[in-house]
Length: 313
Image 1 (cartoon, rainbow, N blue to C red):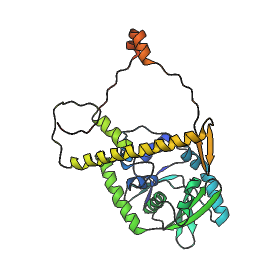
Image 2: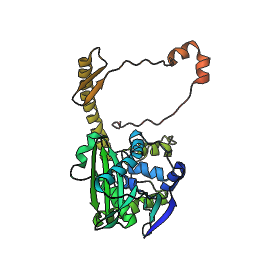
Image 3: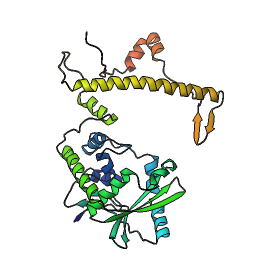
Image 4: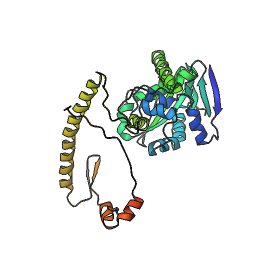
């Protein structure tokens, strides 16, 4: 059974964002499962618990929205299957934390009413659509089928602006069962404001910085034995970072040498640029020396916590 939470027709964008925080949407499913390439579970948790400000969608998301109607029209043109718009925010009655905002609905000759999902993708991702669909979209459409109870989804994609493909995805009960469990566990963390296990995302680092902004006690504390594993992980990563940083710098130096006085070079499908950029910056050191009072008046005092690992004396 599906509940209609709200009509999204003419809904202000800010209001739509607030509704999204009342549960887990289809695009959140891959984040909860830890397979999203652009967002971590910790960042999603912080978003749902109102701990990070809204971030404007990037160019890819913007054009994806703008081209949605074109993809829908082309799908109907190629398949003869009509797509009905559903401007509603849906909620699963069995699992109220699961929400769905569908691009549309259509009819399958065997499975009946189905989900329709429109996508756009970079030309570099064309291979991901050869035999299947990307994992994050598979989780998204299975999430939608969990909410609606539908048995299938038509998904259509415009790749690189000139390649169109569409596929029919059947309902996967095993995958839906896994999704429900993972999303249920995640939503408990949201409802109870219990932080998720920390990962390596910037969102996790931001969360720690805001939770412990200053060191209060200068005394030593005994860390648990599990700290050894993370110290080794940190030190190994530092070693690899240094190695790869040197390799990165070598490659950069070689390419700069090839460019010489030229600003832009091309090879295969890559564009290498070494542009001249002029900037004006305040010379704080000179200002402090020649005009100390003025410097003191406008200088901002900041504090931060420096992290390091070294051998005990």
